[in-house]
Image 1 (cartoon, each protein chain N blue to C red):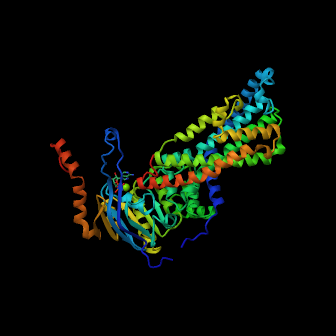
Image 2: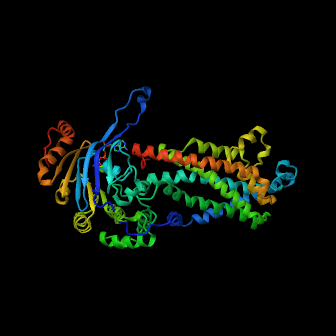
Length: 278
Length: 274
Ligand SMILES: Nc1ncnc2c1ncn2[C@@H]1O[C@H](COP(=O)(O)OP(=O)(O)OP(=O)(O)O)[C@@H](O)[C@H]1O
Ligand SMILES: [Mg+2]
């Protein structure tokens, strides 16, 4: 009966990316402002690090990451902003769609809700990855941070594991939004704690040891440590087994659990008739 | 495929929404709140090539019924089948066979062009992008949207948006189409043409099954093969408009008789009719 061949999942995902890219491009000056914002982050931390130049070498905890505060901070910001916004991207895209009524319209199509949610978050995930890449490239090209680019394959592995680990939390908060129409405390807590404990702007090693143990339960801790050691020290995956293991555990446990939770939440919302309410 | 099955078959469909606890009701959490009964055992069968008008006053359960059929709301009891398959169990399959023109005509991407909007929803319905665009142009010319295709959705008037919602519901050319107040905000000429499109093209020529929800008596009279009169979540009567005319009239009058009495109490000196 259906007159057209079915489209592939990739074609479907592409259509979401295209949609969101077009919407973003319709805000013409945004790209310019985003780039300017990245540049001003670099400049801020460049001078902050400049101020610390004299004492940098006496900060023992920085030594492990190559000893330069500027490169430490930029990679910290690049990785943590990526994680933060990918955590939020699922729930916030659903929330927007609920408020504009497009969520119900999408749900009335034959596309499954899992694909709808994945597609809705995809553009933000890609965009933030590019943004973090640009931030690091800027630090390298404009501000002369020496980067171990020969280690990009290792970085790609860490990045992939970071994506799957944050996916678990992102899908969890998406379920929460579907059910309760508001942000969930878990993701908020993880975001906030990551900022404090994972070592974004200061090495986590300056924290008390027991706090460092707690921080190991945050995916960001592993991503930050691994990406700095890779890019600044040229570390290979073999010396990063802790981070790889940590992120893998998050992904393997988290993704199935959050998918089950999400399916349950959607079903509850269908019963309550509140899928499209806000 | 599913040759013998009815296009839409609904049996004993019941939907109770649980009421939300608020304020002082939290002080007595053991006390159960009475649920909101939106549907109370609805039976309905629609064949291919048939046009059924769901007629009923505000709150009768029309939208809820359409949402259950299109899987957006899960029923409390009873079942709904589309082309012989239970919608609760085969959701994506049911939705593939259904075009749903939502009552909410704002549900598009306001910063995208009409063409891009239809393309996107077409792809969600499983059409390759190129086919979705071709279909969008086809529907655009049918519904008078051709000139608007390149414009941002946000710049459309209410009636133009409504026509976009209709185009979206038809984009995948499904065998079953649900319209929820589809002529709302359309001017008389366009309402009349839409009714002709539904009647002559979709139902008579293309043999589709159409359910058209409305509270407009005149619309029901000119459009329906069969009227299903809904009231308080039940099917109150079913038949041709002419046969049901008396019942329909009294159903709508009784529905708001309380409001009418209140009006007369507040303004006893006013004329009763305009
Ligand atoms: N999600 C919901 N939660 C609670 N009650 C609901 C919900 N959706 C609908 N209802 C209630 O169910 C009843 C039927 O609503 P429905 O929207 O189906 O009416 P309708 O016939 O479409 O009315 P209208 O002509 O005003 O569109 C109403 O009393 C409404 O308040
Ligand atoms: Mg309604």
